[in-house]
Image (cartoon, rainbow, N blue to C red; front, side, top):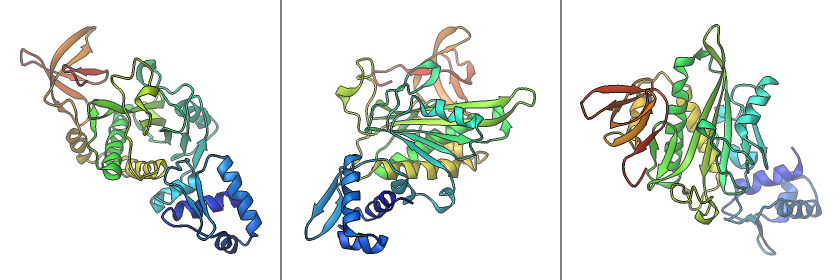
Length: 324
């Protein structure tokens, strides 16, 4: 491990206190000059480091650089085996993940970007992904399951995001079926799962689950068409590294137990649409009805004005209210 990475790890582990240059030098068996030069290099990289003659060095509370050293502190031990790749900028973490699957990327490989130039959402939409203000990551999975069984991956991801937000910020997020996370009536997160399958066997060999969370994107930074519907989490006293680690922990705990019936029950507890009138597209036409349930496969059960029940397996719904 490079000296820079070692110092980042120590500073991340000790965010609540200062560490003297001499202590760092002793811990790492280097000179104080080497420590000082490395601190300067980290500041050029964007780290905000408070330095005091009497106390030493300490990460400023506003320093929020994504790093593996900062993430692994909060990772469950069994998930530290996974490969985490972090980039300043990518076109799309999902696109990059699918590319490296061809090169043999393993199950559990996690791709994280500080910025996306062409973040992707469902139905060919873009996901606004400015630098330094969000979490944009993709997880490579090797399900080896039938295509029909992998729909629950997105369900697990949505529950994991909500669990993470609730634990780290005490907020009350909601899931707009099937893959959008809302807070206070506005979207703060989108999820996109893409599968690579063997059509002859019907088995999904690889899947990529992409998750984008607006952490601290100011309203004025959103494009005009998003300002009314999008918002950010704005957590206090918590880094993106910790949120990422909690998300990874929560997602894999759920992913490893996709067949657990409790997963759907937990998904329904977070639902924004159940019991509400919605508009949706099915059978080549726009329809309205009431969302009454979510079945074991994650499909939405809808009852129309004639009390006729139908099942929506995919697509998009809109709440028939001001907060959609």
